[in-house]
Length: 417
Image (cartoon, rainbow, N blue to C red; front, side, top):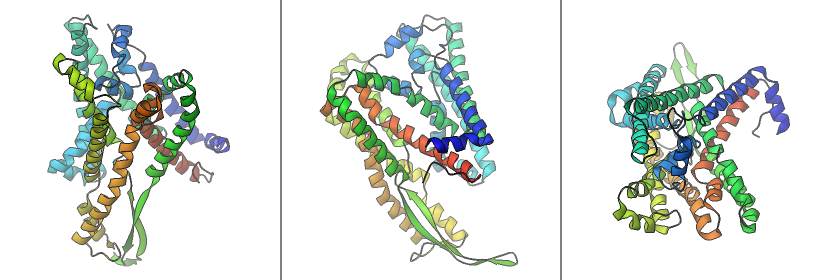
């Protein structure tokens, strides 16, 4: 491993990219500790204690603790992620966006521009909601001018993060937006280590074994794919004839990624959040919406399965894939081109999504199971698995692939065998 890292460091271009990525991530973490003007970060941090099961606790996780500090980057990059998801879903509904998606690079650039505009709007709305919520709770003593300054600061911070993420994608290593979330997730590692040190002998013994097992299972499923064989016929192009060939269409087991887990966690966090403002419902929520309760775990797993099928259907359209194959002279051996191919791809994808959705549901509920049956603390169980480790492992694999491709271009041995 160290020899491979040494080979990567000896490539000048790759070294510059790695250093540039590290610089941007360092600036991001610095901004996550700089409070917004007129904010007492200690007071807001005390307010966030014990709120890990609410919407605020979930958003604080993806901001790397910046929200509990009410820092400049308190919103994190989640408004951009939300805007991207909304635009992806709207392409199915709005014909104009679907047409832009099919126009290639120019259409993609236009959709990215719409995503940026929507990100700014969502950041402004979200920062306004936080400011008025904290003022209502007595955590902010600010007049109208100070509130406007806080809202503008948080919105500008998200816009700056969006630009920094695009810079990493263009001049650094890996996907910039994913790396920013990855850096936020890694900030929880010291909390997990501290919880492990303060835990009992059982947790200290089984923690490394369970952690390695979860990581190995995630890597195995994330890399798993079903390869559909594709045969291309000979075609006349211009004055020449292209020779046919055989390739394959990779269908990943977990095509939806971690998005279903984020959606399900957000939905399940709504009842505890709303119950804080309606005391009459507090008792019911406390009995049924705890991390270790079976109703909570069952509903969360069910939502993850539903969202996995839904988001996979948005990401992969069998009809479009069958039409593209037919236009380029490709076909699945033994399957007629056109609608029969679309039905075949849909059937394979439906069967393939089931184990992927069950895998996501299992990994997301593992922290609660460890708390309920093994006596692990909540901080330690959060470090073991769930959404955090899914994102961390997925981003790490993607970044290693990009470094692998850069090194293979220069005839160096890479990371992956």
